Image 1 (tube, rainbow, N blue to C red):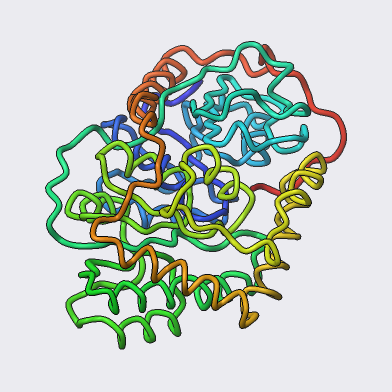
Image 2 (cartoon, helix red, strand yellow):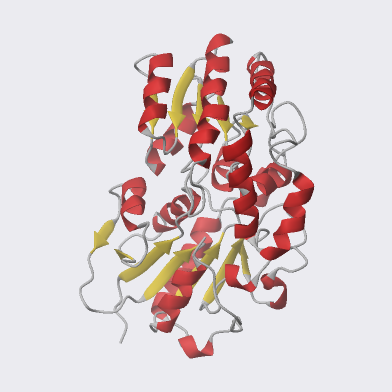
Length: 381
C-alpha cells in the first residue's frame, strides 16, 4: 500500500543543474512531503540550494508513493528495484552514448527538448519509442527588470571526476574575466558559484564590499538574473535556458565538461560572446573520438587538459585577450540562439503532472516499458 503524500527525490552529484531542475518541478508540487534519498550524496546540498519552500521529512518507515529522479540512473534503478515507481528526468538526452548512462527501468522517462537534433548514433534512447519529451524545465516567465549590472556564474563546478580541474578553471577563467569586466568599467552585480574559500577571498578583494560572491540559492539566483543587464556564464544548460527565457543577453565562457562543450554548440551562436578553449587545451576532434566510450571517458580527458594546460602562459594570454575584447563591447552581444525561447517553458509543470498521475495510479514496476540494460552500470553522473 503506497502512501499518498510522500515523494522520494534524488539527483546526480554533478554541478547544480540537476538540483535546479528538481527545485523547479517541486515548485509545481504543493502539498507533498519531500523525502530526500538517503543513499544519495547530494541530499544535504539539494536541501540547501532549494531553500525552505518545501516540506522535507525524514524517513518514517512507510514507502514513498513515487520517486522523482533527475539525471541519476544508478539511483533510479535502485529505487525501482525497491518497488517504488520512478519518474525519471533526463535534461541532457543528447549526451548519452552507452546503456549505463540511462536507467534500466523507470515508470516514466521524461527527456528535455533541445535544438540538438538527432541523438548520437549509439544513444541508448534510440531503442525506446515511449520517451516523454518535455519543454525546457525553467521558471515561469517573468519580466526582467535589469539595471543591476553584470552577473557572472560558474555553477556547481564539481563532479565525481573533476579533481583539481575546478581550481584550475577558476584561475584561468573566472578571476581574469572579473578583472577584465572591472577594468572595462562594468558594474558587477554578483559572482555566483560553488566557489572555494581562496576564490571568494580573491574576488572579494577585487570587488566592492556590496557585491555578493559565492553560492546562491536557486531562488536567489533566479532573482539575480531578473535584475541583471547581462550574464557571463559557464555553459550549463539549466542556466542557459533560464537566461534565454527572460531575454537576458548572455556570454558563454569556456566549458568545464562534456555537456558544456555540447551546450556551447547546441545553444550558442558563433561570435564574440561565445568563448572557447584554445585547441591546445581541448581538442574537439578527440572529444568526438572518445564519446562512444561514454561521458566519463571524455570527462577524464577534459579535466586532465584543464588541470594541466589552462595555466600555460600562452593559454592565459589568449583567454585574457578574449575577455578584454568582450568586456570592451558597449553592450554584451547575446551569445545564445534567438530560437531558444521557441522551445517553450512548461517542462516543470508537465513533469509535475506526470508525478501526480504516478502517485495516484502507479504503474506496476514489473510492467516497466524500459528494456533491461546488460553489463555493469557506471557510477551516477
